[in-house]
Length: 315
Image (cartoon, rainbow, N blue to C red; front, side):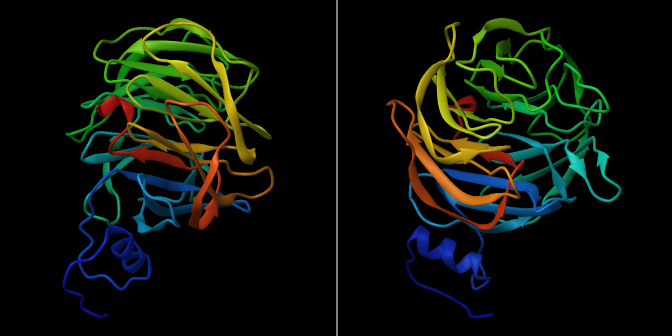
């Protein structure tokens, strides 16, 4: 492997890392991760990363501890945590939680276990705590459980979502409030106070009932994008309550979408209805309008976990 020295731009470093031609994998800036997922019926363990403030193709970050789809992610400024999903071997609904350190690209490390193994769940976070909610075992469940991101260990019961139809629920957060939206056959939005425990409270309704959306946010506005064969993007103001509002459209229709964000930009992976997509879109969160092409993943996927070190919960 070649050895490099001198002053490099971050995009050049990302390109070298993706090509396995970089001996120092220390990263910087606002990083978004797309972890695991499904492509053509096969579960993936690979993690791709982007620098949210730029545009361009993703690069290779490392691997999860298992090959898994329909999984969820949350994050602090330093650590990304992935939990649950439909995993190999054996097609189990897993309770495994693992984590990565954003600024050091590499493979994930075991964190602990969720209280219940399930797939198609959502996750949100503050700067210190992550909350996993909803999903599907052999039936849809409304369980929420939480972790302290800076430690390792098993999750603890948080409370229940107000709806039972939680397969494919999407989520986002500010530093104080977590929001869960949609799910199979429902357009319900509900919220929690992340620092406490207890059941969620009604927030409002989606523009249209939808599931398998990608959810992300800055500290004030939440974005829900795509879902089951739709290109619709909608938004909420997290500190208030009320129904979502139309934002614009993705460049392609989504399916099992994933999203990451920093203070100004949401990066959206629409997925697709057949096998998975490598297309990344982005929008400016404070505005409204249709999405713009960002670049491509290293390898296409749907039903991935999205994690960002600059998401709304950390701001």
